[in-house]
Each structure stands twice: as structure tokens, then as C-alpha cells.
Length: 120
Image (tube, rainbow, N blue to C red; front, side):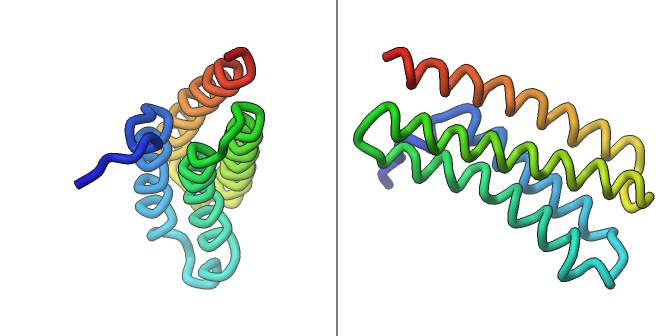
């Protein structure tokens, strides 16, 4: 089976781990949030890895960097929604810290990837 270039990116692997964590965390949210924060958090977290994958198929480094920027923006969206979820007491302190730590690692990796793409 062919391995695509995005599958080799460590930041893509980390973002998939974040998706799994978000799905686990949101499974304990109140059921009335099914079409609210649960859906938003899950879609935004999936968007991080999806934009990385899509970006690898682009021809120019500038275009690739654009999709890396979109991934970064989705990561910030996830963080914002986690902060709100924590304020609403939907997330435990431990899960919040775990997710936030993963987000910090991912954003650092995205920044480094974008810088590399723009300076090739």
C-alpha cells in the first residue's frame, strides 16, 4: 500500500492523535451539545489533519504554506472551543490540560512547517 507524503508528516500524526482525544473528550459532553460544541470541536479537529493532507497535494510551496496556515487556524478554533467547554464545566481539568498540551505541540510544529515551506 502506498504511503502518501502527508502520512509521513509528524504534525499530521499528532493532529490525528488530537482528533482521537477530542472524540474521547466530547463523548462525555451533555447530549444537548450534539449539534453544538461536540460537532464544532470534532469538525475543527478533523480539519487540522485534513488541510495538512490537502496542502501536500498543492504544486507551489506558497500554496502548501497556505493550507498549513488554515490548519493552524483550525487548531486555534479547537483551542477556543476547549476553553469555552472548560468554562462550561464540560471538560475535566486533566483532559483540558492534556488537549492544550497537544495543541501547543501541534502549533509549534505547524509554525515550523510553514516557515520551512515559505523559505524553500
